[in-house]
Image 1 (tube, rainbow, N blue to C red):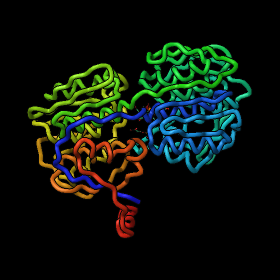
Image 2: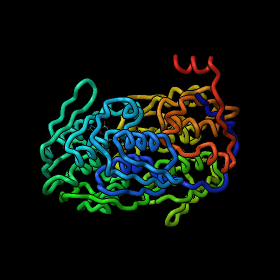
Image 3: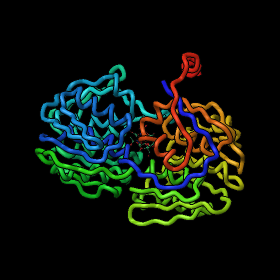
Image 4: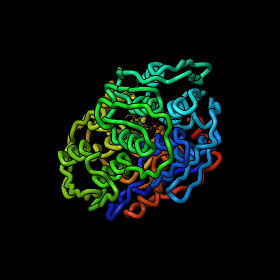
Length: 428
Ligand SMILES: CC(=O)N[C@H]1[C@@H](OP(=O)(O)OP(=O)(O)OC[C@H]2O[C@@H](n3ccc(=O)[nH]c3=O)[C@H](O)[C@@H]2O)O[C@H](CO)[C@@H](O)[C@@H]1O
Ligand SMILES: C=C(OP(=O)(O)O)C(=O)O
């Protein structure tokens, strides 16, 4: 088991290239199950979620060949093998095996998903959608059993705007008989990316990226080639890091429109930002001012950037309030930031951050993926060395974090933990 060490205080300069989007990758890979011939996905990030899903595709009999960031998936030999536990618990997106296997085989047995612990993360809207399409769904000892004689298109209104439910229902509906309409659908760019892949496979989907998605079921889907979109959350994380520590940082391979809500807030704080089609130039040339932020579904401020943004607010003048309306308990990073001398209080679903403060290096734990990102930013700002444990969370979503940080002028490295440190970590 490793820990991450960051020597803080080095200002950052240069260029960082953003990898393919985790939250697209984790849906594109299961989507390949629906094809009858090979699918190639280009530009996948090197993160552990991609490895775990690739292994799950192999477990159900698929052939998966990786060539750098490209992956070739032959789904022709796949079978509806039950996946009740094991790897499915390691990540959230294993739930996409439900929709994809239901669509292709009309049956699936999948364990309840894992992923970041952000408070309750129910999947009732996914199940409501599968049932509306004609599936019988039962939960037996922590695994979801899905079966349908036939899937039939339906009109499905999501009671909660959900990325996962929108994609999962799309996966099941593309091969259902007749027309499906998903109302109150989520509009995240990753949904458009998955719809683009499915359309290249032969699916008929209209409206992805709006709150009404219309799908006309087709009999068969075939293989295709697809290039993934850049990761807006990784891009947002480096943008926030640059705002915290950057003299001048160029974020390359980004779609600036995906980050409008973040960029607007950074400009309000006093950060200078220039953009072109696929790059952002971030410059901090004066003290920054505190702002309030409320997370919302896309195109609102993403909950996945709320935690990193909290670290930036510790450097701003005044008091800023971060309210998470998606995951009201997504504040486990706050205790860790307080160990580093941050002045933050949590009240209900808000964190109240007062700055600026000099953060101090400390031993801290990444309790989830974006808590990890928040600590990396705080560690880069802190005086002295910060030791971060819980890297298995960070590795789910950030490719080559150490290399990217150091290329910008940061000073980070990984070290094996001692037996005593592992024991202490496991008991904490
Ligand atoms: C793999 C992936 O893409 N993960 C992202 C996805 O997670 P995920 O797809 O799990 O998140 P959802 O969009 O589904 O969740 C949004 C809200 O809806 C609630 N809800 C969701 C489904 C459901 O059936 N019932 C229900 O009540 C959730 O508890 C949450 O409060 O979107 C989240 C919100 O942008 C991001 O933080 C995650 O990074
Ligand atoms: C919450 C996240 O991921 P997941 O849904 O995969 O747990 C995230 O990417 O911030």
